[in-house]
Length: 260
Image 1 (cartoon, rainbow, N blue to C red):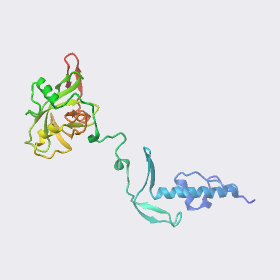
Image 2 (image 1 turned 90 degrees about the vertical axis):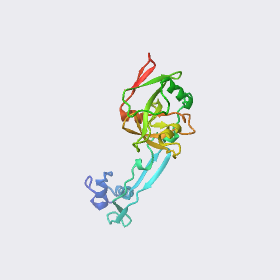
Image 3 (image 1 turned 60 degrees about the horizontal axis):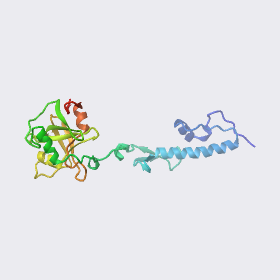
Image 4 (image 1 turned 60 degrees about the vertical axis):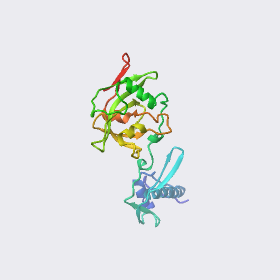
């Protein structure tokens, strides 16, 4: 039986395709017999297929239990390096995970829900009376930090009144809005009644509204979902806390806290 003698890593007999494959760090091919030469051809065919998929931009990945294959749309030109069907992409349209789907664990604000059955519109007015102010009544703007809130029994809710106004209109009214501080909420919510006090009852209520809350920094707020357990509650979420770099400091003896 004839044999093929090649120096280690010598793939010149395989042509330009092997050189390209070596640059892409595919396995090296060494042949010392005819049988190994046939095996090398089979390996080359597999490598050529991998290289073709790579050059044409075929991307395959798993998201959860769903496996999706994306073929990037791009302009291509023919090449004779591998075969007449091989194409090399020119200026491919890059597609990232961020442009395809929401990040893992993300829940849309309209789908969030918090079990706040002890707080409603009536309770907010009782809290306002205890704070000696009018809920949704006129307020002076801007306010200042630290601002004091109350630890509201029996469920020890952190309730605070903040002066709020719309960002877009300089002459828009400023209102006292009582918020429940919830560090578990990624965003800030305004109930329908509170949002109406800022934009007007005759206006179409937006799903989101940029509001200046107690200072000149505008925070994106979302309307509390109607079918949720906090439809009548204003929730001060982490986007406000992070943007203003404040955090509740609790005074258990006085049953108060401060956003400082």
